[in-house]
Every structure is written in structure tokens, then in C-alpha cells.
Length: 538
Image 1 (cartoon, one colour):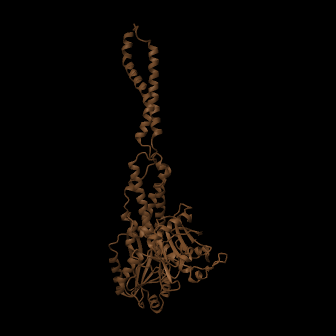
Image 2: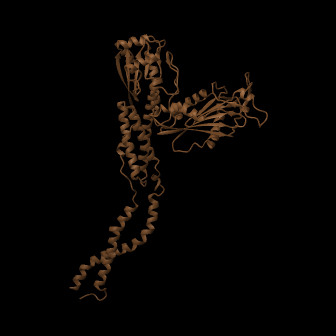
Image 3: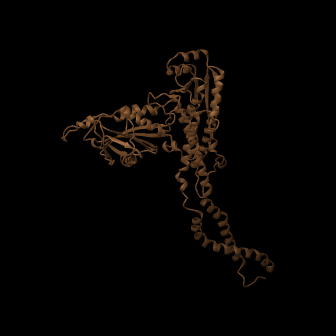
């Protein structure tokens, strides 16, 4: 017989089954759904490959062919070059020793001009080939070593081998600069040149503070196209350049110059301290409006000085006059400024009446634009060459960079881009490992995987000497790594850590969990008592 104090069995059973279904629904569907909707989405990344990155192991293979009159001279020169570069693991010189063919040797000894000798070598070998240099013996040289614009170096004899090694080390290959490029610490050249990139804007600004007093005869657009355009066209394999020009009027700057009496047409000069000049850049930045793109901007400014401030002369920190045909200064990773001092004749004819036409003055364009190109060379990574005793470096006859300078710039940028890509990827991998709630979406994952793949391809191309291929792959790796590192979606949950997540969800779920836990307890007790109830009923 049944217990009179207990509830009817069907009613209790229905209640327990309802509790069981509610608990099951919460555990089987509710908790997994909550867990899935609150998890951080992360694409799998090649952490093992990123951890294996070794920037200091990067090197570039380059070919060097020694052409001498005899095997002994070729062997001596080769041995000394190998000895000079044995401590530099950043370069792998593949040196080939060749005895000059008799016909080419006679031609090199008979021509009087080195440029004709270069043409003779070019007729026998492929000079336009990247990353390949020819070291050729030429007995009639007046100096130990001669270097021009092509990928050819002439040396006189075996006694000139020491000078030749210095030329290769300090002018052409610059292994110390390459070491700095693959390092994560900035050296003197790296602090000056612009960071790597796919392209740059080059903006020429003609600053004319007082156009009413002096008319400047200058076609800025043609000057940019003729001079700057011819220079950057030779660098099209490295970067895409956009050229622009603009005029800025009524931008007066107080140089706080000191008047110094001197002999000459002016009878004076206005001395300005070097440290004062960089304040001019702030005024130019406010008016130049060069930040119109995500690409870096190379700023070139011609500041036309009013007659009252001319001639302006720059003095360095030691209070010594900067002797230069053109007064100019350069700001690292910004650009350069050239001061246009008008001629004394133009200022002498300044009208006394304001209604009279202003005198005209035409800036010395080759001198001004040549200064800008010299600044551009340094800002883009082409270093100045110190003189070497016994060696002659042919002066530039055009605005175009030398052929071997292009190869040096390709090597420099390749190592710099590989090092920067590896630095971005390692930093990003470390950040993602330390902060678990950073979202890694498909786009970021694809960018990181692409950077890793391009980095490996660039390193392999550099090691086998395919310089152009190595540069392009390293650029792809750098751009992909930088884009992934700066992706805004990485910050989506950065300020929503786990403790805040639990602080929000616990007050929501805790009131629900109390009846669930109690129902689960009653359900377990009911299941235990159910067999006993059946026995009593029987």
C-alpha cells in the first residue's frame, strides 16, 4: 500500500522529469552555446616557423669576376679580397678568376679613356646584370683603382690589391652598413634614411615669403620632372614615386640671424645657428599639406629669402661657417631645405614705390636641384663615399645613380626588409601568446602566413644571389607583416579581459544556476528513493 503523506507518484514524476529536461537543456545546449559564443576566434598560425627566425643568419650572395692579365695576378688579387671579407658573414662573395682574352687585353691597354675601356668590357660581358661586378686589370691606369658608374672596377696591377679591397669594402659592398640593416638597432645611416616601403611621395615646395618684393622665375613642375623625375626613374625597381610641386606664399620665419660685416657685393651676411633651422620645419609642416596619403613623403623645400634677410649663411654648433655653394640642411626621415639667396643685383633694383613691378630673380636651377638630389640619395639609402688614397671615384655626370649603387641599395633594402618583417612577426607572436583574448581573424592569419612564406622565399633568393627576386619577396614579407601587426581588429577585445567577462556573465547566470542546482539535488534524491517506493508499493 502507498504512503498517504507522500504526493501522488504521477505528479512527482512529471515534476522531476520537467526538472531533468530543464537541467539537460541547460547543460547540453545552454553551456556549449554560451562557451561557443564567448570564445575568442583565432586562426592557427605558424608559431614554430616564426620562432625559428634568425635575423643574424641572413646573408646575400654576390658574384665577383676578377679578370687579370695572368693567372698569378688573378690568384693574388682573389686571395686578398677573400681575406678582406672573411669576417663579414653578411656577404657571400662568389669570386671567379679569369685570365683576360688577348684581344680584350690589347684593347684595354690601347684605349686612353677609362669610359672607352668600360665599353670594351661591356662588349665582352653582360654589364647590366644585377649583383655582378667585374674587377678588371688595366695597366695604363694613372691610379691604383678606378671606379665609374658601371659595374666595372679597374685596377693597375697586383700591388693595387690592398686599395682594391678598400674600394670594394668601403664604396661598393659596404658590409658594415649591411650588418646595420639586418640588425634591430639603428646605426647612423639607418637613422637618416627613410624606412622601407612600396612607394614614396616626393613634394617640392617653393616657399616665397614676400612675393610682392621679388618675382621668382622658376617652373617648379618642370624642375621636378626634369631633375627629380630622371633620378627616381632609375629607382623604379625599388619604389614607386609620385612627384608633386607646390608654391607656399607669405610664410615668414624669424631666423634670429646675426648680421656680420664682410667684404663683397653685399657687404654683410646674416648668420643663423644650425640648431635654429629645424624650427622652420614646424612652420613648413603646418602649411605644406603633404600628408595626403598613407605613403611616406620626402619633402624638398626651396626657401626664397627676402632681400632683407639675404644672404643667409649657416653656422654650425662650433660657430663655424658652413662652406658650401648652396646653403642647405637636411632633416633625417623628413627631407631637405635649400635656401635661395637672391642675387645682389635683384635686391639692388628693388622699387621704392610699392606700385612698381618687383624685380625678377631666377634661382641657379642646376645647383639647387643638384643639392636636392644629393639629399634624396642619402634619404633613400645611398651613402656618401669617403676618399681612399690611390683610388679614383668618377664624379656623377648625370642625376642618375651609379649602377653598382643600385645593387648596393637592393642588398641594403632586402636585408632591412627581412629583418623588419621578422621583428614584426616575432613581436606579434609574442603578443598573441601573452594575451589570449586577442582576436585573430582570417585576414590577419592570411597576412601572417603570407609574410612567413615571402620571408622564406626572400631569404632563399638572397642566398642564391637572385637579388631582384630577393628584394621583391622581402618587400612582400615586410608589407604583409606590417599590415598584420597594425591590424585594428587585433584591438577588438584587448580591453575586455577574462576577469571582466566573468564579472558580466556571473551575475547573469548565477540566479539561474541556484534553482538548477537545487532541482538537480532533488532529482538525484528522487532517483535514489524511486526503487524503495516501488518495493513499498508492492
